[in-house]
Image (cartoon, rainbow, N blue to C red; front, side):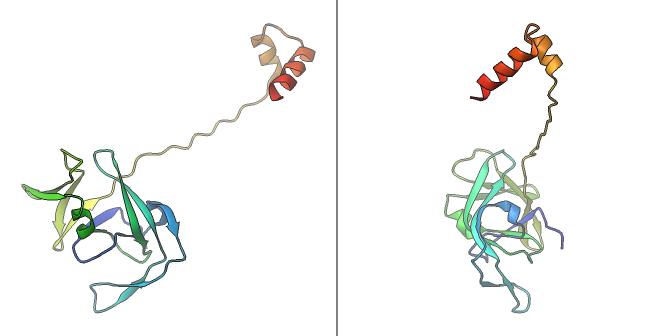
Length: 162
């Protein structure tokens, strides 16, 4: 099953739910319970609970405590009732809906209606992992340090390491 970056703002859930461990900063995987779905009284099992982090379109992090990890979810769910406790406003702007909070003058989430619920995309910052590898080259350092001899280079190395 592919992990979806789609986020639905749902009025029927009491906890935020995510289908990928990577949304969590801290995840307690010993937390398991059944959650009801809207499909013919079926349930899914949570595989953890913790602090989830989202990156909104304005570049701010949203910290979402008590979020549930449910790997079988086909889309991520944001509990609108929980968000609404923080002075949230939903405004219609043409064919979209903008979600505002008391800390924003611009909407951090812009939603479309999909299957009767508000849908938005989760943003993630681009991260880079850089790796370099240096090769010890005594001759190069010999030239850079004013033509020191190899004995002085070893002495310098020992003093730097101590």
